Length: 215
Image (tube, rainbow, N blue to C red; front, side, top):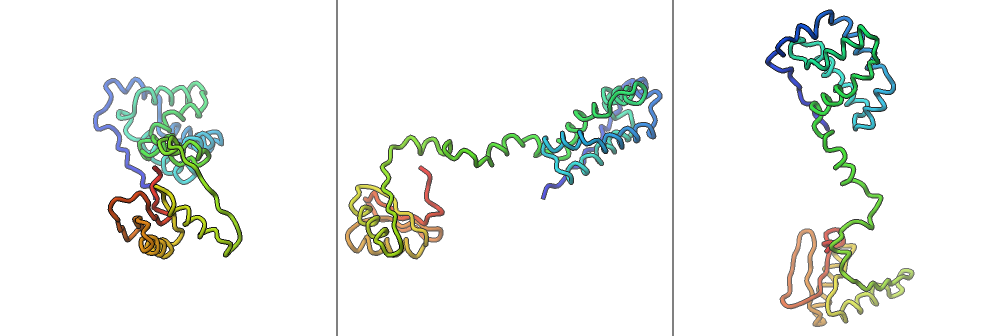
């Protein structure tokens, strides 16, 4: 759940703000803000910048409150823009950069949207874990139907290897292989979510699949 921040207007007024607010009334500014809220383009731009419908409404309410607060606390450039919209007929969509800057104060996570998109991008797994990918590996894939000897052959190669990792899809299976391997003189470690059993001077390890390290 994203909790909005309260953006309080500046405590100090801008010196000479009267020249920017001359002729501006709350009613005209309110109408301009209402038109801004209704614009489809504004909604689309907001979506592109990480504001869904709910966040947009919340940010707009805060922005509206800020614009209609004591005008001495509103930045002069925004007041000039309102003058141009109301008196010169400029497009209300020109308010969007100011709205977006305000929205990012209400929802600070919007500033990190590009980083969040990059972190959550699952479309290029071949670029993940570059350090692990520099390690040269030889992979043997054992395929076949149930009870065809896949696990047996894989574990046989595991026991013959100088170093390696067996990934058990079940914790019970990993524990069973650990016990049998060490009974046969194949020294290996066992690592699961709850249990870590290490055998000295070995280069083999058994992991529960979900916690195997990537390197």
